[in-house]
Length: 276
Image (cartoon, rainbow, N blue to C red; front, side, top):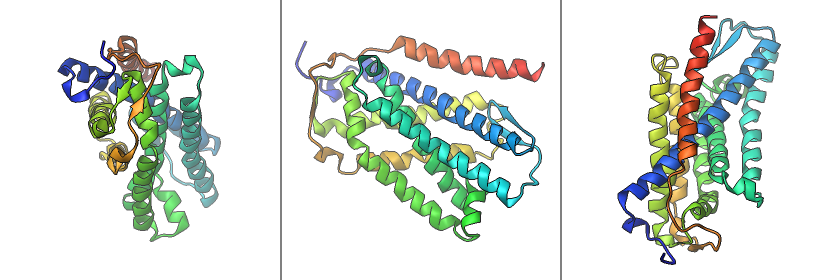
């Protein structure tokens, strides 16, 4: 076994292993982050005395006779919730306990998904009547575009300051990763999995994939701004060397299977609940 693995010289199937592993973690993070967000939102809405239900494609609200106080409580708390999730996942990602290292990539994706959900809803809500749009209008009726632009810049800056965090995830595979290979690693670890993951989510939501006029996919698509921040000057970071890395690229079969099973199980549960 050589002391280093050069990404461009890897067989294609090994690159596909990185892609498959990261896509599985992307989907698991989407299930955990978005579903807990939606459950929390439904809980708040019902606590305020309004009718809402949790669906496989999102949430539905049956009455919108909300007072300003109701809107403030619901939207402020639902905006804070993904930030708390991001803090939790970031803390878990930084822990040095061996147990946590085994699924560290899930915590990385949990952090990314939480921040994308927060900033993405600000971005889309700034330009459309979706996400945090009511909260933005509470700040100022004409504040939407400005807040949307600030959120776009914020998500890119977050990607930039998360460069080292993402590069450290290469320890799942490599004892050494040259900084010249960072952009290529980002492709297979973050960019391609997010695109492929959104495709699977699109299939998962059929036939209600257009329930929100695809604005929910615009929220998820804002991850491209995060990735743009990752690419910026990333090669100026030092090369990474790890003594504990396996130095082989394996397919995480249990994680991939778990992602597939959870997606099917979620649809099955919602189908059963529909007819109960």
